[in-house]
Image (cartoon, rainbow, N blue to C red; front, top):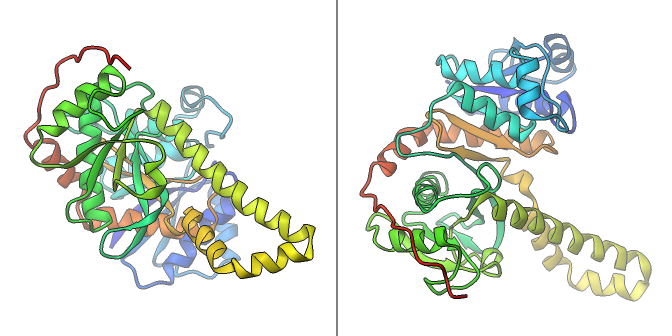
Length: 351
């Protein structure tokens, strides 16, 4: 039985969606026991109202949580026994195998940094995100690609980008079942000389790496096309791209809804396009994936969306179990220990 420590506090929707998601999972035939970490009385009351298997769910009390609008360091310093730190300690001591949280992203990363070690060869961890693509990935036709970093490390060196590429490729291979994931650097042009100094140097290093399927640089328009299975970038750029993708998909569905309400002929047109609109909704529904990993720690960490509903939490816990079953952290160690080129500082791009 895989024990997952779920930080049950701090999400946008409060405790209820997290407890309900864990409760739903407890009734399924999956070998996961969820340790709900947080306000003991509130969690117990929510469980009392929710059908669940009591042998697959337990409560671990914690003192407070870091709010979404709170500075991570301030919150963690003020509450050393808060939910995310308590959950991380359960994983550090081996009482749980994986940490899952839908709370303050900065607090999750900083809390994990204070509790776990980084893998050898990792200077900075990477916050990953799944993004919708038109072209399916892997043998199961997964409609999501992987992008890293999307906010943990704002500025990256070539060495850090190279490590991100290796970790992303390993994760995609293990979790998405893609035998040889296509790895690309996000840049402002496909040419090897395009991009920042770090991107140019990372391109040279990755092109020489025989343990990766590196396809070169991709541009922003390639991301939704699914040109690459793993897109590597600095956190500053990745976070902007991720928010833009979420905004565009929300806007497209919102425009369609508005048009349908405006005129009858628009509704008739939308009816003809209904299958396409359903496809857009499926592609942009991050709830079916649930969460994404924070890669680089010596323990497994899954970050769920702050707006997660019960379904998303259930899927995030499933994903957490999968990373443990497939030995993600040990496999990351092996991948990072592979032949590594040491990129030199590249000359500035003329573009």
